[in-house]
Length: 392
Image (cartoon, rainbow, N blue to C red):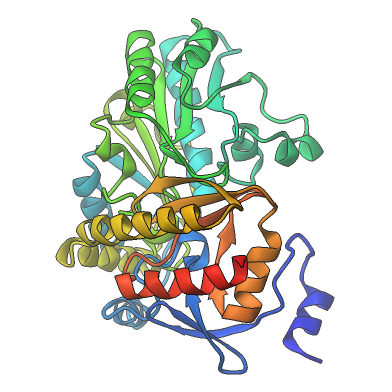
């Protein structure tokens, strides 16, 4: 039996997988079990920010494995402390809690919002405002604030008192604010919803609404953070700072780690016993995250993203102008999207099978470009040639 046959007989069927078995990676290239090379413009869904086997990352993991892999949060460990210091320095936040994933980071952020509201003496039926077309994860809490009924309906009833506003429509958010509002949660750049960056007016307006009411602003940077927008965190490009931020994906460059960070009152909202995690912040993943943060600083990954992201933007604009199937192009840095007037599933599949180009979608009609942050202009040129052949 093939690996695919064996997987179909054993793994829970919640994914519609492509018929490819990847065996190894190098740089921005993946190789299947037959040795075929693929250009990767999906990065494991925006995870492999430094690509595969970036110098120093593997070594950090190997070094930590030889020392200590796990102790639990009943004790302190060096790598978690170092990773925390570096993450707080680049974000300007006050406290961090390490998790195993992005959706767990969202759960922690929601608990901060609820605990903060409880501390303020808000009524027990306090509300959280989320955004339509948003995506925050698959757990019950994260699903409750995900603004897509398709994801939520099979699992209703979810967390109550979640109200959905229109993204980039400040009046829509304002109309939902009340004395019960505990927090507003949103992605700084919507990913799964179709690659929609927040406008500066909108983000600053929501920040002001929260300041005036005492509600917390939670920004989900799980996909758009870690330099993908050209700033270390996308909100830094707007001059707006959240009370709570979530991060994951590229933080561990393939190792499972997430985090929620908080500042001000939110940083002290929860106390001993309010939250915990068996694996969160373990020495192995934190040693890798610490090294990843070092590399981002030493190699100026945000600066590189700005340069190559501008080049990608120009090339995708040219592609849009050359095809009547492409109706819109948007995004920042190395999180960009092309919207088509047809479903993109076949385009993505044919790109993989026929051109050995890894792409992913965002919804039914958008191709999402979230490659490793270390791609070059030459990689962009190669991707465009391959994609144009598929489209035509």
